[in-house]
Image (tube, rainbow, N blue to C red; front, side):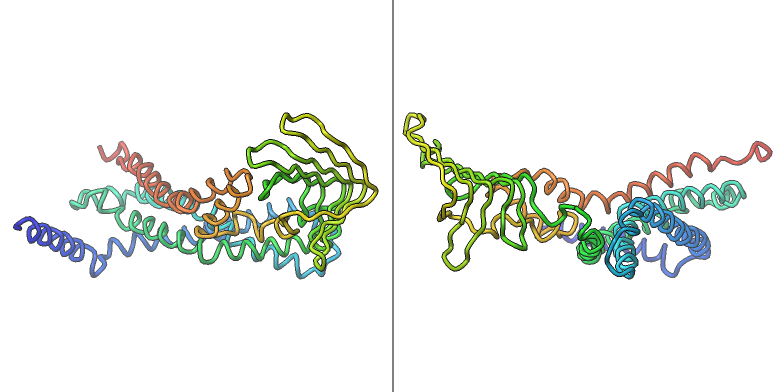
Length: 333
């Protein structure tokens, strides 16, 4: 019974100690953080510009050959900025800014003066560490609420720019998927026409998992009125319980009633980079149900927390690097 009041008193004392230490802010904290923040903002702007130039260079062929209005190029670049900042710029800017700030304070003997006045190195860099922790929280929320939705807009603009250039961005190419009663193997699926070209292969399975029928056609199109698949250049193979070929037929054209409609084969609304944590969980369930690989979904789920965590890691690395530069010049020894 006495442990709970003691723990509350300890927590209250700890909170009051930190409140007294940092509020109101000391001149030291304002000076150090002010110098750091100016360098940090400048580095973010500089690196963002460099990464945008690299993005332009990577997509220069698409930008020059596109038939879309030119403003789509600008929209694509603008929508790409949040991803650039969250995945690369913030972490690099944090580490550089902290290392540079602490290094400059050491070279100018300001760090030595602070420590000579009785302020520990940890206390000096505490505002920078707290800023790194704050950036972790900000990046975690910004990635989920801003970056991923904007990634979807960037993908739409990219598809607009590459439309009609011979890309397969909106199609399924050599796609295999598990259905309710068997497996599908598709070669080229056009979602606009609900048409499959180049090959449509279906293996219907018995309840024990053995193949019952194999259907192979050159082309397939779905009729929403009759809910039938109309196939051309069709071959059928039927197997008995001993997996021996019982019959084989060939048709110029034939209709089939299959468990799945065209929507089952459509590419998901966006890539894993465009999905938030809840959408990633749903996508994982969907892929497991269809028998698809979902390694990229698991990787993206981990990156939801791992990438923002980099802000804390690089902050600590920057302060440690600064710690080894805090020694005074030989003239002061």
